Amino acid sequence: MVPFANTHLSYSRLSRFEQCARSFKFQYIDKLPSDPGMPLRFGKVVHAALERLLREVIDQERSGPLDPNRAITLFAEAWRAEGIAGLQEFAAGVQIIREFVRAEGIVDHRDVLAVEEEFRLQVGRFEVLGFIDRVNRIDDETIEVVDYKTNRALFTRDELDGSLQMSLYELAVRRLWPWAKKVRLVFAMLRHGIRQTTSRTPEQLEAALAYVETLGRMTEEATDYPARVGGQCVWCDHRVHCDAYGKALAGGRKELGAEPSDLEAVAREREEVASLAKILTARKYELEGVLKAHHRDRDELVIGPMRYSLATTTSTSYPLDRTLRVLEAQTGKPREELLARVAIVDKDALDALVRETSKGLDKSSGHIFKAELDAVAERSITPRFNAKEVRS
Ligand code: SF4
Image 1 (spheres, rainbow, N blue to C red):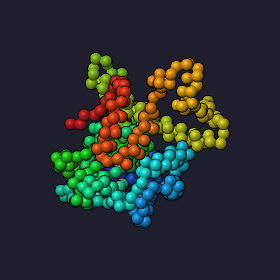
Image 2 (image 1 turned 135 degrees about the vertical axis):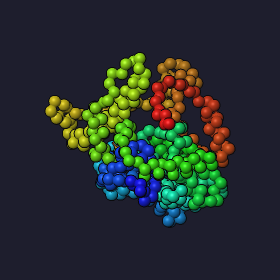
Image 3 (image 1 turned 45 degrees about the vertical axis):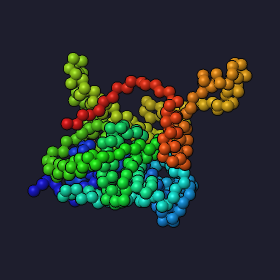
Image 4 (image 1 turned 90 degrees about the vertical axis):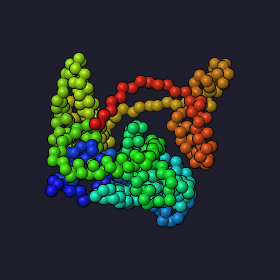
């Protein structure tokens, strides 16, 4: 008999096991109450608001722009239902919702095939259960799977192409909408207003199925559930139960003072320090959130030997036309020369304009438009030290 049997599999169940077996044990074997932190709860609120917003479009068979006021009302309702607090995150959510509505442009209910679509996939002896945030009809042979993310960090190309979640979603939509010859996979990175896309070959989908079955068996055959302290602890909803996390917070490092000549020890200590830095930084932000909440009604907060106050930062921008007029008058130089010296196009604003304009173009005109912009772009490359785990 296996020590544990899955009632079903899901992407979240599998990814929890992949990321940290101890967290899997807390959740599914010990069935301890989970305590999702602010990032998870914030994501849940944004998802709920967007789901209701799009469901209304489908139910009322509407076509046209989304209503930003209705969208913000739905966000506020979801926020209240979740019972969270924090002005900064609330304002960030409102900004995300506004940008979402703006970027969507015209939404035709006939093009939104589903929101929060439930699927069940038979994989070997397992049933894989899941929900897809949104499925769009692009044309008569193409559908688009959209997963909303409120992550602060964008995915790397490796993460996009290796996402098990997206492989499962493609397998599911190919069975739910068998007429689709092409499937586009999109992570909508809501904090950035960016869509990160990926795709799968039939061979990759086959491999994903085999992997899911293997991982499913591993979850049932495991007898040891090691804690894997790392960046994922920041998001873990079982931190409160985890002694390994507690030790990490207390600074309990195993590797210390690696000899520069011992590269393996250097690498081990580097990874341990990198994990601790992430955990401690996240904890610092959590603690600052508590202090800021108490600070709100006062100019400063004095606790023990510490004085806490909020400093304001100022950013300056110069409107192009008026700035050039002043420069022309003062320097006597021609506008073209001044433009070449001081003007640069804001990339975020340009990306937003390109997305907006591309919606009204056919596919090839859209490609040409982007290629023309790419051709005039000037790129600078800065070397960045990168570390990535090699899984055997
Ligand atoms: S806090 Fe980290 S090590 Fe502990 S269970 Fe969660 S993910 Fe695993």
